[in-house]
Picture (cartoon, rainbow, N blue to C red):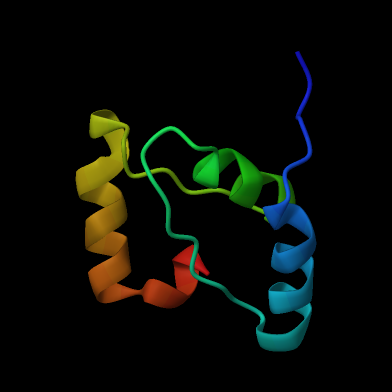
Length: 67
């Protein structure tokens, strides 16, 4: 199943073009991560316990590597 366009997609485009970043807030399971991933060039997910500690360490010591 492919991505279903959401109302927020247009607003994400506007905010990303204007500011280069945006904050997505909403209830669990409403598609925040999926919508954001559609707009992102890269995605770093901290949910994966196997990589989380390393990603947090990189974020603390060299945050530019995660940007």
